[in-house]
Length: 72
Image (cartoon, rainbow, N blue to C red; front, side, top):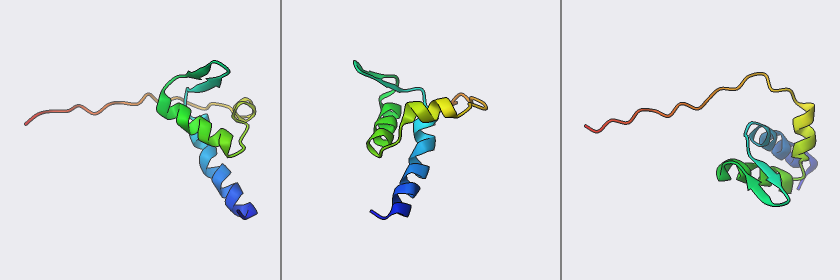
């Protein structure tokens, strides 16, 4: 893999790893499995998620709003 491809991969994965509430512990996963999968992917790509999380400041949090479903 070229150096720029690895950098591009890290740039793409970092927001996904940092913008979720899942955490990996020695005992397993804490949080949503889909979010945990993104953290695992970032770790496997060589990103130190815990270190980057400490270096990054959270500016705002937006709750996810589920759309209302209606049956016609």
